[in-house]
Length: 239
Image (cartoon, rainbow, N blue to C red; front, side):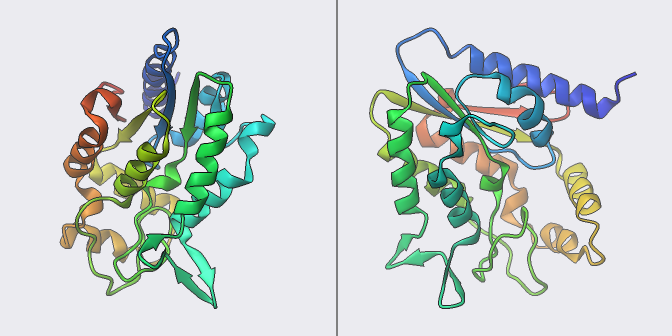
């Protein structure tokens, strides 16, 4: 008998596949980015569902085009910054260190023959602490760190990506949310850390990472609500 977790995974998977497959058939090329969150069946989707779709980018895909070094470098620069003189640097002269890698990757996207590309990467949900530390997967921080405030950094990343894409490539985003209490419990259990004080800090300090309303609205405002899909892990239904 399937467990409730697998039923949730299957429901989310079916909803995502129907949404993505339904994009085929018109003249517009599309880049669809699935942002996670982590702990919302992302790995199951990447391992068993998304590789069945043409144009899939991400884990468990063996197609040579999608193993591009530009994509790997882009992910690492966004999540961990650049290591310069032994220090993690996230901006150079006010410009994100990931910007050149993003520009190089967009050139590969434009040259692809696929009508739809689907990039699934939960690491894009990482949000480093205001002290500038690398964002340990996906939101851990050191004791004494200040809470996150404002918009998630993925918003600026996607805005820059949107500006780089040619007019015949439409950018769409997918975000799967899980209620915050269950999400935090699942994260702490997987990390198996001896000190899970970061969970208490996130809740006590009203950390912006847990503000699902804000990130959903930011993603909808980016290119209009018709270009963003929010799903709930608990039922796989559009929110």
